[in-house]
Length: 182
Image (tube, rainbow, N blue to C red):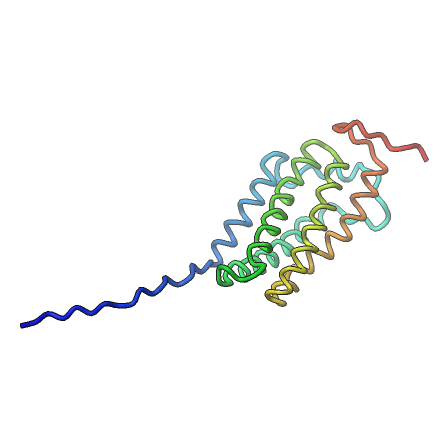
């Protein structure tokens, strides 16, 4: 009796698929990092006491807008993460999104925790630039994923206007910034 051994060709393991709970973990981590230094929802009285430009949103609007922005961004991030490793621009998008999540997580500590409108505006404008780059890079990979980032891009364009005008017209005790008298 002869034994025949069949050699199977080595097949690569399938690419790891990221699931919805991976996106939830990213979102929860960023939000936890955001609220820990400054407390939940920051301090609305700080925002409400600032001299803001016409069209500035009320403080109650930020949580639902950011919940929507974060949900659509996480969905987009998940689509890109599930592209095959080695896909051109995939790593670029994931790095840009990682930077954007870090900026998001740092905002409350810098703006509310340090009570710094200038640092808040800096983070907001930086996030606008990173999001714009991410939308462009994402569009080359997955148009639906790029469209999912567009609400964040639009909100950050609006928020950049509000934040920069607010920073220019208010005292920043942390940085020692004093607005020029009108």
